[in-house]
Amino acid sequence: FQQNAEISVFEVNIRFVGGLLSAYYLSGEEVFRKKAVELGEKLLPAFNTPTGIPWALLNIKSGIGRNWPWASGGSSILAEFGTLHLEFVHLSYLSGNPVFAEKVMNIRKVLNRLDKPEGLYPNYLNPSSGQWGQHHVSVGGLGDSFYEYLLKAWLMTDKTDEEGKKMYYDAVQAIETHLIRKSSGGLTYIAEWKGGLLEHKMGHLTCFAGGMFALGADGAPNDKTGHHIELGAEIARTCHESYDRTSMKLGPEAFRFDGGVEAIATRQNEKYYILRPEVIETYMYMWRLTHDPKYRQWGWEAVEALEKHCRVDGGYSGIRDVYNDHESHDDVQQSFFLSETLKYLYLLFSEDDLLPFEHWVFNTEAHPLPVLHKEDGNKENNQ
Ligand code: DMJ
Image (cartoon, rainbow, N blue to C red; front, side):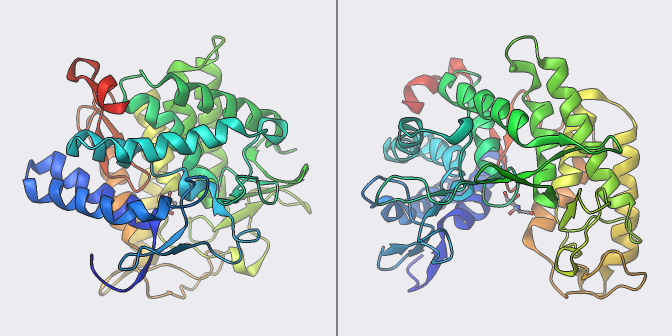
């Protein structure tokens, strides 16, 4: 933790803070609690900006932060600063130090003060001016886990975090109106929004949203529970199609619904598969919430494809082109393959009482965090 190195605040939080917190809750070993809190403290200087919206990058020795220069004139990114909430609430809960929860609650305050174009959250926010950057909206890369954490913040507080709940269902309403479309072949997809214009492309990352809609169905306002489950099922089907329409039965990084194609990657640089979990994650949620056997069948198709095309001597590798009959391996096994892809597969074929949703939420890297039940006094701690 003393290295003179620049780290991604988001990645360190979801992979390492989240991993340490899970290790603590699953083992009860004090060392994990202590290290999670120590690491959380190392991240705090990232919040030293005029608005308290954290920097994306932080030198953990000097505490100096900055943003990616490519991010709309040095903005912070919604999916990055919006994906600290669950871990930081737990850090306050476990340390007795309210500072962590205060930092993430302030992020919400800034967001709630801002006007949102058509009710949508742009992916970029300038941490100095507190103004939106480019009006690009996505439920995939740069946006995704912000929405996931609104819902899970509500669930993780035993449904006491009413602000998180409202922000989630309002956001989904705007996403449905402005981003969700149906192709002529009947596939529901989530497009990207750029200053009011739609790009009819869906990323592999966006496929997590099927599971999210289903997980959030229960609390949906205006009797919309069935509708949110159905939306989850439709996204799951579309993402399954994106796998089924390749030679390897593994999905591309992004697929399009324009120029006469549906659920197919048309650009060479979008044809790769890097062992990502989102489609299997959605199958797992859909299975648990509906028990429709097709989700296990689809999961098993993915297992067979992974064994056939990604298994290599040293482990598993990403693939450069899923439409090619011959594998070209990228020689990388991403850490989310173990923490997410294989874990969600394991859960898909396990009984529902293994890490039941009533007691656990998964952080965006699939590290399980316990629900803070009301009787354990979560209200005081969260405040
Ligand atoms: C993971 O690091 C997390 O799920 C993150 O939210 C986005 N996607 C990668 C895996 O694809």
